[in-house]
Image (cartoon, rainbow, N blue to C red):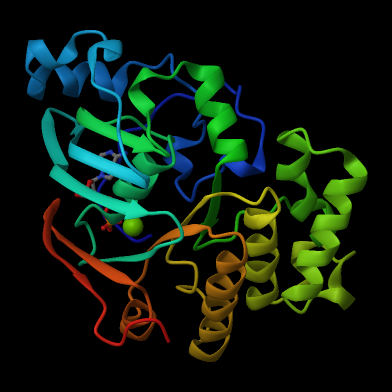
Length: 296
Ligand SMILES: Nc1ncnc2c1ncn2[C@@H]1O[C@H](COP(=O)(O)OP(=O)(O)O)[C@@H](O)[C@H]1O
Ligand SMILES: [Mg+2]
């Protein structure tokens, strides 16, 4: 992530524990931190009308089968005295099992969208629904539980724990989700075999290639059998051949458990193989269409 501008730093309370909650944003290190009012209060005051700040419970429940729904989502960051509108009223739905690619120039709001979908951050206004549940109505515990059980994350920089083996990294989210250790290990081994890492189970990240680390991260993301996989340029740090391989693995493994995918990508080939492509520009959806090539 190369951006020449300082970011709003949210102080960490150090309560975040799990690898399942890591993001590629070191400036938002603690996704479980709901006590810091920086984003919401400051930017909320600036942009959110009072009526929409009434209790979340008053919002109507989401209907239908969408795995993910954004309803008029706005996200404004504060940078110094300036307000930075990252998302300016974004609405879309992702059906169960659907594969949505999110494209757009750098700074168009793609990562922000993914963080909001992952309950790692909160919108300034509007609402995000995961599996029909409005995230804004959830307390800390329920958000954490949702992240651990329903969502899987794959990021550009892998975010593996350096002191743990591939097997331990892959097991961890399942343990955090309450899966018994034996079952967690069985799932982790199975997934690592499926992504071609049978001979790398006991290797630490510094003993693996980029492609191997990303395949480990993929096993880790899927070990809980999430219904929604969120991926931020998961092939962005890989050479094109390895990237294509990881992309195909994501696609085929997700299909097995009818896992919906929202994947930010710069790769036009990958985008063309998604079911749908959502294009962002300046925090707005500029197109939302079924991929021309369809399911490849
Ligand atoms: N934590 C933050 N603090 C301040 N501005 C931010 C923060 N995160 C993102 N932004 C700004 O919001 C806009 C969208 O960022 P981002 O979602 O990371 O875009 P993309 O992933 O498409 O490159 C950019 O202008 C970016 O600088
Ligand atoms: Mg980004």
